[in-house]
Amino acid sequence: MRQLRVIKTLIKLRLSNLMVFRLSFFGAFLIDGSMFALQLVMFNTIYSQVDSIGGWSRGEVVIFIGTFSMINALNMLIYFFGINDLPQRILDGRLDHYLTKPGSPLLRLTFESVDIGSIPLVLGSIGIIAYGVSLAGITLTAGKVAAYIVMVLLMTLLWYDVELILRCIPFFVISAGGITQLEQFIELCFKVPGVLFKGVFKVLFYFVLPYGVMATVPTQLLAGTLTPGGLCYAVFIAALFTALALGLWRLGVKNYKSASS
Image: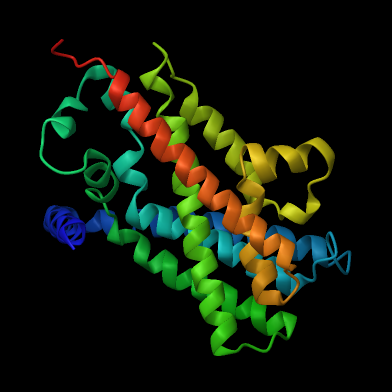
């Protein structure tokens, strides 16, 4: 309960600050919304020539795009702007400010920069998913929708874990200037359905950097094609990366050299 009160306070402070810059509310929506619109156009162009991609129908791919858009929107809404510049805070000593305050520094970093400008993107993502469900002719039930929501939240947590792991690297190396560029390059694979990965690429994007799991598994769950093994693996990989992320964070803080030391 105490942690929830801290999160509530951080969000209130963030919202009061955002009211000063109201035009920034819709920045993420305009940029990311345009990106996902282009992705829809691209896949529609492909499906004008073929009936399926990797065994997926047009409707399933639209659900995938909407799911990716939803996870990305939740990422931007909740924690991205809080932990994005963690590497620079580690290197220039600004992390001291968080470590010397009472409470969990990671909790504060995570929730202090929520971005309500991403809410329209969340709503737009719901629209894309609904369109995909209609195209695929999927019959929804309350249980299936609830399971899908839980899986999307779990995959959002998994993305947070991967982002945190990458941003903890500067705890252990002097220079980590290429982390953001590397992450942006690798995240391009997040936009490709995981069912298309084969061989070494499937190992890479299903286990080492599990971007191939994040939007694919919720899509399969909603479409009714997710196997029990696939469900168990998704839960396992999310739990594993959460443990790795928290462990690496604690180890990094333990070895952190304060700017004042």
